[in-house]
Image: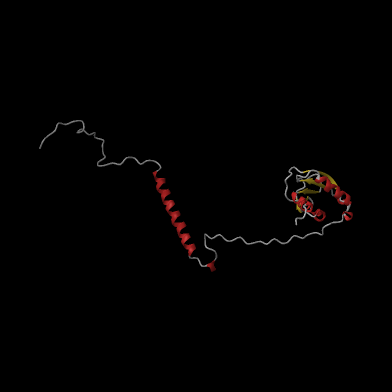
Length: 198
């Protein structure tokens, strides 16, 4: 058997006690990775089990676990309507109602015409002015006090146009009732001026 000269690898220190293959030191935090995987697997199994169970629940026992109940259809109760006040002479002055007219149409001066007609009829008018927009389609009568609904409804009948709307007092602070004229007010007048075709 051949012999080889000794070198530095043949001289082992006396304090070496490890024998065989050795693993390196564990890296910190690797234990949490295993825990996270286990937690994820548990969540998947639980979720899958509940979903499978929900498919076999009897309808008599209630809604399935993942079913969303339909919201009940609520039919609003009809609101009580007041008797429209169409005769301004019966309006109690102590109520302190004033009526403003705003023109939301392209026709200049329409607010003044309507204002003068209401004033002549005895309605307690306040002021008339153009609206901030001149292309408003629908006519509305806005009132800020629920007790004035009868007057607003009466004005809608008097004008022959418009829907009444209850609004906050700061929307139209100048008057208790504000009429905003829309272009639908002009339609009948335009039809009346058209010549009939033969």
